Amino acid sequence: MQNRRIVVLFAILVVILIILASLSLIIMAVPRSNLWASSVTQIDKLHELGFDGTGVTIGIIDTGLSMDHHEFDASTFVAWIDTINNNSQFYDDEDHGTHVAGILASKESIQGRLSGINMKGIISGADFIVAKSIPRNQYLFGGGNDSTIADGLKFCIENGADIILLSMGMSPDYVDFNESSKTSEMIDQAIENGIFVVAPAGNDGQNDDGDVCFPAILDNVIAVGALSNGNALLSFSSRGHQYPSSQHPNKKPELVAPGDRILSTRVNGAYGELSGTSQASAHVAGVIGLLLDAYPEYRHDGVKNYNETTIQLFKEIFAKTSRKVGSLMGNEDEWSHDDLYGYGLIQAYEAYKELAKH
Image (tube, rainbow, N blue to C red):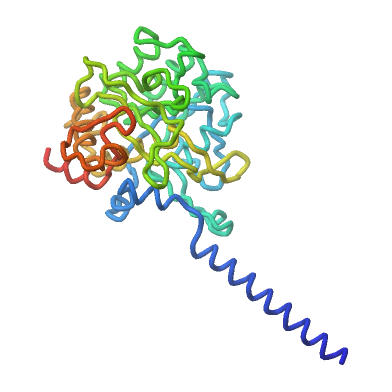
């Protein structure tokens, strides 16, 4: 009788082990990822065509970067500056910059897959410039100051950026920025050099101040709001305002993109989800990177880059090819726009086809 019980217990243990092993295999076969975000933006279609941002350089101005994460290839981070503490080594004392960078640069590491995570960066083939220009505990409020942000922009311009992602929203309640600030001057210089500048619309939608935040409010900057998995505007995403002087394609925000519980890299080799218009902005910057891979003549030093004219061309294409979601649904006017969803959800493949006509 005792031997029989042992056999039964052993059999139960074997079954449990088989179930656990099967679950592990399932997790590895179907890892956590941002596939939904890649699908709704059509990023996956450009990946299928072989585009990964190769040859493109993007500057990320944020809280820094934890470069020792196993999802990162150190050789792709070609330039670093710390305008806060003048540290010569990569670091991130807040975690926000590392999360934003992972959306763009992750390499689908083996360690990640073994953990049940598949982090495929939108433009993992690109080169990255990182400017740590936001102090610890301040990115939520658009921290930093005019000089540190402007110095980060200057560094990105001087090091050959094609795109600059200013992944923070400057709340006027915390930082005094305006169109005559050093930051605005450096953004103008970037535009004059044919560099795309992308910025979050801001996260003050529940305490709205009447428009998107600085620097997204500037005409030539592409302002991005944040959507949920179901294409609904997230409650915190800042609203725009239809000023009579606003002209197409510069009405704010210009676009919306996935920004809800986006999985990405964290400091100390970890992974985690964050929500925000910064995460949405990373998706738009990534789409631009894929398009510049497909059409290198539009990079900042390309033969068809005509500075502000080129920026406006891309904005017009994004407006015309965006997917009309939320309150825009059913509107057949390609220039339809509202304060919540802008011109709509960015569509990478449609923009790729439209750009081929120019």
